[in-house]
Length: 108
Image (cartoon, rainbow, N blue to C red; front, side, top):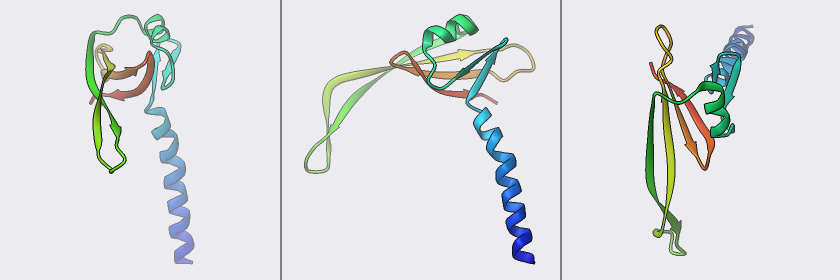
């Protein structure tokens, strides 16, 4: 009987925490929703220009046969956009690589 109660509690915790974890990666701009996989053009069309914009340049590495890695001489450009959404709303950071939203994080 005690094991069944623990299993029921665990199931309830999973049920109630799963939707909130999924919703964390969705941004609402008016009546529009932005999520991972959306393109950068639709983000600016739906949310406007970001409050701040930053570009990060990272060197690309390849794996060698011996288990190490070496620089390829190429770089990847990642954009980080910040939207200050006004009073009583958490600002949001959107990471964009290759013109596609990679992640959405709310700053607390």
